[in-house]
Image 1 (tube, rainbow, N blue to C red):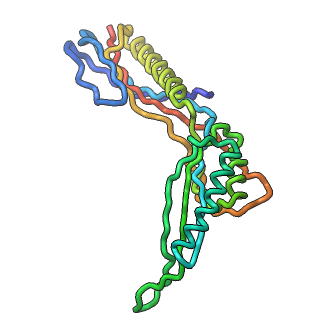
Image 2: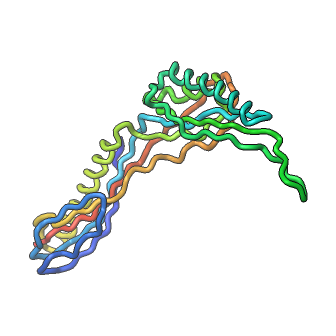
Image 3: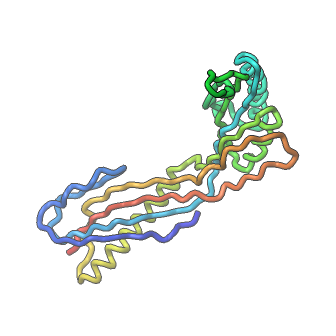
Length: 240
């Protein structure tokens, strides 16, 4: 895990009453009214880490002369795909249907109603791969079993709170560092924290694009990269 430098902005103002109410954020802490000079710091904490879980959206798309024929063939291949996912180590609880559809294929003709030429059936599932190194092999197993559509691979953490907490600590440390710097420049000292409000969250990388796949010999390469987790804090300090 790599902790990045955080950026901060500040505002200094004097008051002898209570500070104005902070905007509601994900978390907020307030102290009794301050009697000195207030310093408000907007600090950002960032950490980067390698994801440890992949979520794949994949499935089967089939065609048929009738809706029933397209759906029957789709169901047969989808059962084989689900069995292949389980053999590849994906737990039953980590396989979830995300979409089922049957749509007509239409041929448009000038000045005539569309002509239905057949039907397309699609069934998609999301599968969580908790051993991220197996992601490529899971995709290969699904394709070998009859899957022909992969709609994206999303990377995340099985325990995102650990990354959020690391980013929070980085943001607090940056806010404190800036407060000490400004207090020293003003010939004052930091007496206490008056209020804290939080916002921000981790943003996973953009998923892989939609792919129409056929069976292949080489393993599908997967690069999970890193995920940046960001937390923003507004911290108000009392200076004396």
